[in-house]
Image (cartoon, rainbow, N blue to C red; front, side):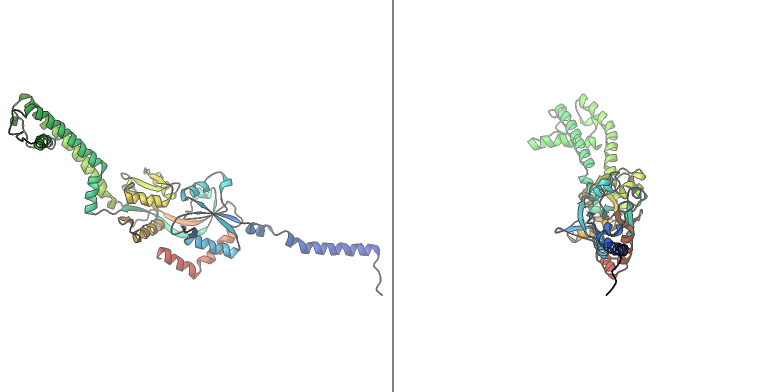
Length: 375
């Protein structure tokens, strides 16, 4: 028979058993901090920005979404999407209120030194540049745009108003005694004859003082003949300026060429910062689709944004019968690098970067780029 253990030996043996058991159970009961960080569901902010983030039929797709889902799946992460307008997402990531910041942001977000003060970025996953989009101007569109211009319409109304006023004054002074100028017996003729005479004066026509019979009419004719020179010069300047604006859109080469145009950019974007830094006044829009639509309708003369988005959105619209006159000019203004947004000092950063580099090496990623960007 085996010997019984003494009391002290039994207690020591029991303690050893408990210690070994606790060391075995502890890792299972309390995961390491790194695993804990990756197992919690993440909030992933997405802002629509085709072709990087596309929202159709209740589903998200696009280059950035595809890449994030590849990275998230490789790391075994779980997440839920939270939708933001792109302008709001850009304002949120540069806000000092850290409570509103999601765990990850997925969109066409450029890496900048200013944003790095508030957030971290993953490695870049796309390289593009800032570009200018305008409406193409043909001779016909320049002419129609000229006559549809508010400045031209205003000038025409002013000319007609002055002509009617001048014609009415001469009619009252001369219609009873001057049958050479006022000979019509019809109502239409009595209306048109004074207007024609007024237009001749406004446009420096052939009506001279000696054609009138009353002294008042002759003095007035002399004064109008002299003053019409200045009126015509002013109207000519307005019309020339309007025609220049309608033909200038295809002559844009640099940012300086935008100074006399109605220019738009996305709010809180690097494009808006670029325009502001060069002293170019511009309007902002909350999302990219509104920006392009306003250019197409003529509310804006030019827009500045990232080339990848502009080319994709305009080409997509042309396939649907839209944006027929829009074009992206072949001038690279400023380099842009897109990356995922991460919270500052995010514990996921290194893991996401490794998975991101791995995903970009795959053939599937190159196929996706070719599908969306044609590269």
